[in-house]
Length: 223
Image 1 (spheres, rainbow, N blue to C red):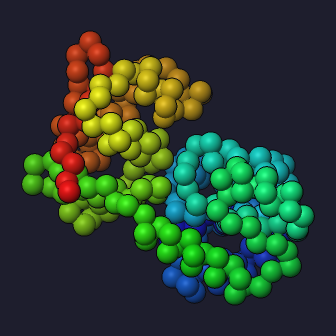
Image 2: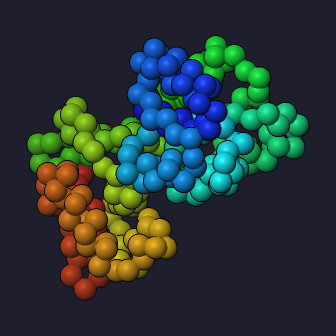
């Protein structure tokens, strides 16, 4: 899996990154929530492993920001062991909680559980001409005839919206409301994302223009 690791204690950060890489995970390690959020905007990850006691933005705020923008799996590490804290985290969509002090075996076990859940998640498939595409639910992974494609999180959110509603025409305003951050909320940015999706997918028909109305999915769902 591609893991985003957020831990401000350098020794713990280095130790976790080392063991995760030994388990064949790809790891990007951070010590500040702000830089981790920037990476999530630009890269595709499958799980976030985050401490809660962080400098600057606190971990609770970080994981809530992540959950608002993505369905990525989140596992948090915390010294707070009371039931109210754990329940509050789970209510906010956290997949699992690891209580300090912890063993590396516990961390690896929790991540293996996440990996099994990811493997069980449904794959959406669609066709464009002779090409077959597969999109993993809850992740930003997409493949064309088995070869991975790189979409950023916003591009993936837009594509998933069209896949979930394949016959619906979406206006620019609807796409902005559903998929874009407030700071990106101007209508012509949608045209740029659509253009990039067409280029990365390799077929201009992936999203069709409905003149005067907006955009519509142009592929065919594959059983």
